[in-house]
Figure 1: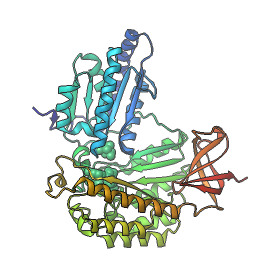
Figure 2: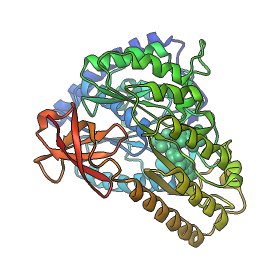
Figure 3: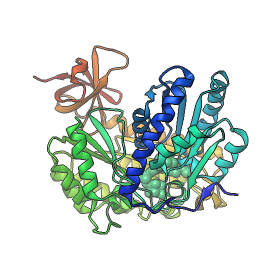
Figure 4: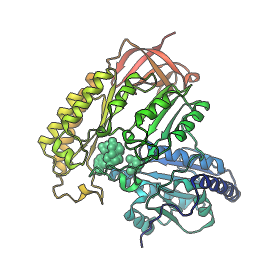
Amino acid sequence: MSDIKYQITNNNLTSEEETKLQYEYIEKAKIKVNEYAALIGHKPTCCVTTFGCQMNARDSEKLAGILELTGFELIDSEHADFVIYNTCTVRDNANQRVYGRLGYLHNLKKKNPNMKIALCGCMMQEDTVITKLKKSYSFVNLIFGTHNIYKFAELLVRMFESERMIIDIWDGTDRIVEDLPVERKYPFKSGINIMFGCNNFCSYCIVPYVRGRERSRNPEDIIKEIENLVKDGVVEVMLLGQNVNSYGKNLEKPISFAELLRRIEKIDGLKRIRFMTSHPKDLSDELIEVMRDSKKICRHLHLPVQSGSTRILKEMNRRYTKEDYLNLVDKIRKNIPDISLTTDIIVGFPGETKEDVDETIDVIKKAGYDNAFTFIYSKRTGTPAAAMANQVPEEEVKYNFNRVLEEVQNIAHERAGRLVGQVEEVLIEELNEQDETLITGKLSNSTTVHLKGGKELIGSIIKVKLTECKGFYYFGEIVE
Ligand code: SAH
Ligand code: SF4
Ligand code: F3S
């Protein structure tokens, strides 16, 4: 029998009532965590590990919010009483990492039998994964998916009440449950989900299957969340969605992503706005105008191209051609000359020839990316591309991958350093890991800058003269 239940909720509550119910479960979970603390003889520690993208990381912050409230001490080490893996399945190597690390956790649990282990996230939405976990990883205590993460407090209570593995995976949800606790990793910046799921069904991609259909949050809820974050010290937000350019289309009162940005721009005290990811097919002229005229939207656009070959793009179901993409880049550069562009590229999609890869390299040259994430195509069971007959031999993929990587590095090197001598605003994010006399921050265009300074500057935006460029980083000096 499948563990994926064809359900979108397990009750008839409204979203507001569900929030209230979950706060009741938080109270119940506090009692359970207290009992657990008495059993192990100390305040229980907990470690949440993120394997996936920024949306996965934001989900981890939601888990951490509940864990903190219910009485866990959050730590970074997996030598914790409770370890949660928030998994990703976008490429097979993400899955393999989880299985590998689970072996390590099993050893820890043998030494500490009271230890609890939970798995959640995108990988758990796959039937084959659940079958494997049930068969060979029976030491895991709790498994849940992407659609019922808002029920984490309730699931925690169930985990503490049961000796057996708890599995709760849903096939989808139409719900967005607001106002649950969140524990942010950084005090001064935060990710914000503006939408969930994806409707694009790019033929190689598993995300629509594991994250469900596209659902946008109400603009009022998003604005309220950001206003509260700003009151709490946040100066930079990253608006998150698999395809932010189609935000708001399916709302009862439809609104465009550009309009949402206009409203967010008006929030007093908010200094920087970022967003990802933009799908080229939905990037509107209105959005380019809003970006051009904005004081707060950062000068960075992540615009995944995936391939430069119109034939492959069609097979990928991306719904733009090489020319469409390059025209779009031209339009963006004309309107926002100081923008930094980054992209994602897949090498080795079924049927891809050397000539197709030449087209990709041509796009890399013409678009002038500051950085590009290059991935080897990974076959994802259940996607249309996995069933395509003409999978490319590994040797050929490696050869092409190296060619693409070389071009990405060439172009990024050419572009690096173009701001030397200029004074730019830097949001200071942390002490430098290698040298404690240095602090590290980010430019509006996302480039990293190192400079002399103390930790009291973390979270502030300061003017910095960029004096030198090493590799892809700048060194700078504070300007009085
Ligand atoms: N929604 C985003 C991407 C999310 S996944 C977008 O459409 O831009 C992040 C990246 O992973 C994708 O841009 C793609 O380059 C890569 N990716 C997705 N599925 C993949 C697969 N099967 N094999 C290799 N890379 C893949
Ligand atoms: Fe995947 Fe395409 Fe959706 Fe991005 S837009 S998440 S690549 S299906
Ligand atoms: Fe991975 Fe899920 Fe994000 S598959 S990339 S964690 S949406």
